[in-house]
Length: 159
Image 1: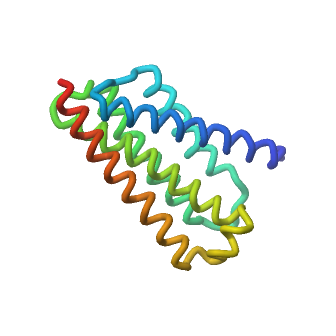
Image 2: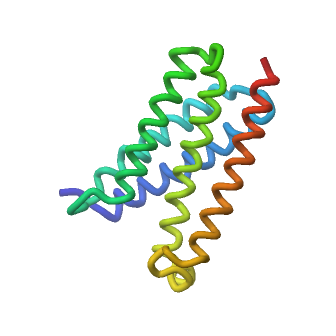
């Protein structure tokens, strides 16, 4: 088959690069900048992250598959808004929202993996139904709502 540990490492590296690039893009949007190179890199790495997630062995459809599928749909709309519709009209806001949602979904999965793979966090929330996990994910969502609002505001004003 393939070397699962190496594949996992590559998947994680691509994911981290996508998150970092996505945060740079969000920062640019907040300041009214398009950051074309960063945007292309963010979209490529985030698409690769979602796509490669489907190659991990699984006996059934998992929540990770659902998040990956949602992410790919969001990214398709993001690509459409940015490169096909050229940010015209309401596509400008659509691009901002989908870009922020795509980064959020990657960070959501990062938090899940941190709670699964990091022993102290796994002890706090072994089933991920415990309050520490819910509070952490709630705070992450809140941060991305604020970032999204700021990005919408900053990128709209930059016309």
